[in-house]
Length: 102
Image 1 (tube, rainbow, N blue to C red):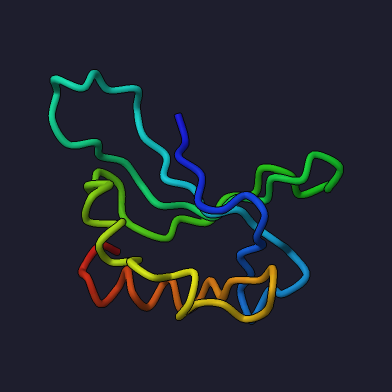
Image 2: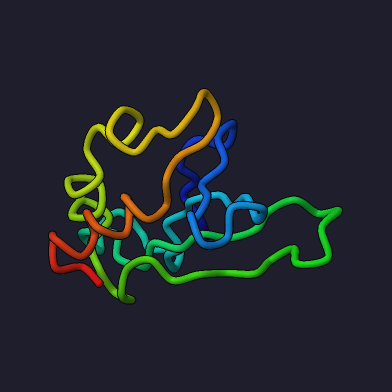
C-alpha cells in the first residue's frame, strides 16, 4: 500500500529532469493496533502512458517510520519547490540523509 505525497506535483531529479515521478511512502497494510507505520519512501514514475511506468527509486531505506519521514520532510512544499508544479527530488534526498533515514 502507498501513501502519496501531492499527486498534482512532479518530483524531479536534476540529473533526470525529463522523468517526472510521484513521491510515495510504501508500506505493508498494518492494523492500527500494530503501532507505527513503517515502510520506505520511494519516487515512482506513475504516468501509465510512459514506457518507463513503474520505474522506482528508493529515497529512504526500508523499514523506517512514516512519522520520521514526515518529520524530516516537514515543509517540503516550500523548501523543495522548484516551480509551480515541480519539486526538487535531490533536496528531498538531502533531508532524508540528514535525518539518517537513507
